[in-house]
Image (cartoon, rainbow, N blue to C red):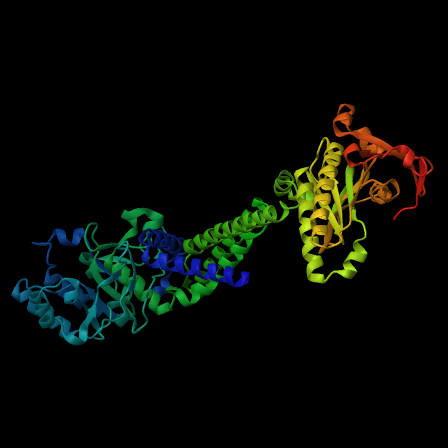
Amino acid sequence: MQAFGLLAISLLISLACWFSSVYFSPLTQVENWLLDLRVALLAQPATDTNNIVIVGITEETLEGLRYRQPVDRALLANLLERIDRASPTVIGLDVLLDQATEPEKDQRLMHVLQTLETPVFVAYATPQDNLTKRQLDYLNMFVPQAKRALVNLRRDSVDGVVRGVLAEDSSGLQGLANVMANSKRQIEILALQRGSGESLSAFPVYPAHVIESLPDFWFKGKQVLVGASLPMQDRYPTSFQALYGLQEGARPGVEIHAHAISNLNSESDYQRLGAAAHLPVFLLFTWLALLVGKSDWHWSIKFLCIASLSVILWAVGIGLMLYFQLVPLVLTPLLCLLLAAGAGVVVASRQHRSQKIFIRRAMSHYIAPEIVADLQKHPEKLSLGGERKELSMVFTDIAGFTSLSERLEPPILLDLLNQYLHGMSEIVARYHGIVDKYIGDAVVALFNAPLDVSDHALQAVLCASELDHFAQAFMRNTNAQGLPWGETRIGVHTGEVIVGNMGGEKRFDYTAVGDAMNIASRLEGANKYLSTRICISENTVLAINCSKHHELGIEEVARVVLKGKANAMRVYTLHSNLPPGWSNTKLPCSLIVLEGK
């Protein structure tokens, strides 16, 4: 279920980022700028194998004419005839002939267009390009249908940059670059070329007013474009603007058509990767970033992992452009990674918070709240391993419980036992102790672990006193119901033990081991010989401030020798715990030997 949830989060982030890259304009603009930057940086120097030349109508060309607009038709007729004599393979006229000028010049140009031996294609536009009906009618009359070619460049709707050219419109009319290259391929992103020197122009540009003096071989076998090469007219922003600025990045329309022809000739143009290619990659890397964010690694390791995934994405993106002419998104995947890593951190935080709440609620029944809080702040205290430390230990046991368990029905017995253990555990928690374990009806409690308790011996004795009061009341209530519940005997000892998490990596128990634990257990058993319910060791009494002895009513009841020990130990109890009329003279002996339980 958790894996399904992570996959769902990854898919949601991937879809959100993809749709943002398409419909969120600021993100789209940045992606476009990064695309332009890559195209400009990867632009190759022009070579002589392009076989594309431009005849440019420059400012110097227009200086000797009576008017600048529309372009003098006699000038165009002369240019076309001169180029035709040089035997090029095709001519493209990037000048819109949508209005009348001088009748004689118009007639001459119409005649030239119809009689040229070289295939020639003339700029054509549609009402979608803001032509009026009058302009369109004139254009249709002037340019033969077989020689028409679309010249409307594809400007991005977000930033207006020209990155591709239209292959054909809905009527099947092809673009100028496509008819000149005899190709129907769609160019989505131009692979621009740059000049070999400081100029960005990748193609020879011959001024229109000097071509009469140029040799024929400069045009022979070439694809020739004729159009405006002016500083302020017919210029469009291209991908060069990301690297060279808006002014230099704006190139003449006729030059953009030359780039398109070159791309079609060499099939070197770029294509954008669509959703079908992006989404699986987004999903994979988002899922990996989510796992990294959700992990318990140090933040520096997480940062290195996310940075590595980002580098891989960018390297793959550059490789796709260099070797496959495919252009992927680059900012959106990084956004996916960051969002997924952040989501992973949030998921981990929520899980940790839920775990802490669960641990606090579950353990607060048995462990003091301050101990639970300390474990939450320092979970390393629950790692596998231990330490040598002085603890106070409390052992409890119910007299005659084995025979009782044989007489009572299991549901009744378990219900009573759960009530009893719950009450005993809550008392241990109130005195800053932890329940180490339950051994059937017995309770083992530790004080001074894992959280330090400065007066742990005193807390253990106070806890033993309240445990005795609770056990006595529980016994009376149970017996009143006709159920023979025995007395609870309690042993308290203070000593050095090894305490910590012991076991295996998959299952371990927080406990204490050592001789002091055995002594506490045997003191609990000594109660039946001493007619007491609480036995406190000499070590515990010595660890308590003497001024507290009178308040607690601590009294010595015997000296005992434990099995395996050479010296006797003084054993104490609480005065309130003594039966009526009790005195030391009632002991069978003042020195007894305990063999253990």
